[in-house]
Amino acid sequence: MLTPDTLPSFQSALAEQGVDGWLLFDFRGINPIAKELLRIEGMATRRVFGWVPARGTPVAFTHAIEQGPWQHWPSAWHREIYSSWKSLESLIARYIGKQRVAMEYSPGDAVPYLDRIPAGVIEMVRAAGGDVVSSGELVSRFYAVWSAQDIASHERAAEAIAAIAREAMAFAGRRAHAGHAIAEHELMRWILDQFHSRGLSTDHGPNVSAGENAANPHYEPSASHPRAIRSGEILLIDLWAREDGGVYADQTWMASVGEPSGEARKIWQTVREARDRAIGLVRDAAARGDVLRGADVDDAARSVIVERGFGSYFTHRTGHSIDARDLHGSGPHLDNLETREERLLIPGVGFSIEPGIYMPGKIGMRTEVNVFLRPGEAVVTPRSYQTELIEV
Image (tube, rainbow, N blue to C red; front, top):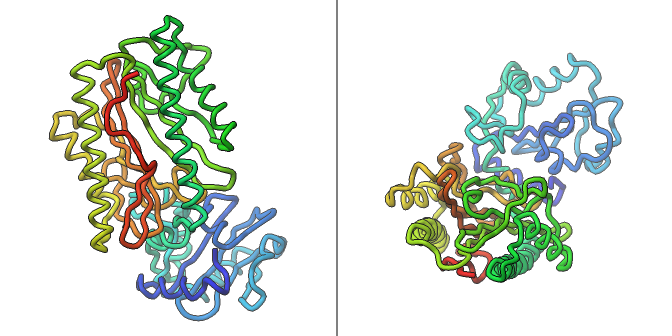
């Protein structure tokens, strides 16, 4: 968050980025990054601006009838009050005009998770003479990074859901072989009960997919369309959860109920190798002190699947940002397919690595781990991630 104590770090980063300041904007919650960094609380129904210059004192542009949401704005910092659109535009021209301004803007909508500013606001700043550039690297550094408490919470959640996934697969296998196959939605409910018993929660899911359903990456089990998990099938479990106020852990585990087919083994080996190539690339770069783009890691994982002849069946990015607030966060993603992720994987950020192969109506497989970066180190969670197709 932006405070008097963190302001020097913000201004140092702005100078490094070669911008004159960061213009944080929100309107009715469309930009959670600005709302969080400015610590806006309470009723805020008018446009909110916070100008953080590379040198000097920050300035808040606040509407006359909404001073309450700015209760955390330091009294030593400037506060300009506007009421009319003319007065607002005059303030923009006075403080921002003819400067290079970072905003939550992604040219060409290359990264939708970053593209938070309406086109009209961009036009208003440009009309005042401002040169608007992306704040992408600033968002990674000041919004997406994990604290030591975030890391500890994530690691606990990661170990817990890994254990739950293994137990769930074994349970499904026992039921299938005993002739009392459990349905996908019933196993989903069982997993949710396990989350609750271990102090974890989730926003939705998990995804429990058997047989051909695993070929749908966003499949959701349903009691209205029950589907039994039977012997001879591939089982995919994608589960994500967190402690109260903690950072999500997000994993996908694969099993075969009985002996897998040769095709299933080949597909598993392919997605595992793709995942491990991405992990190796990230680990090696961290150890050397090099910095990768999210797109670089996507390219590395995808190349394995293409080499094995399954390229057309890998239809999503290799991984998504996980930040301290959201499972699909606002930091850099591992993506050069769906979006053009040019942002850097800097120490402090976390993300998933989850390549998959999906053959519609037939079979689907994905393997997923999480990674967070420390200086000189890329840490993979859970500690013991899946290396072989589990047979239950």
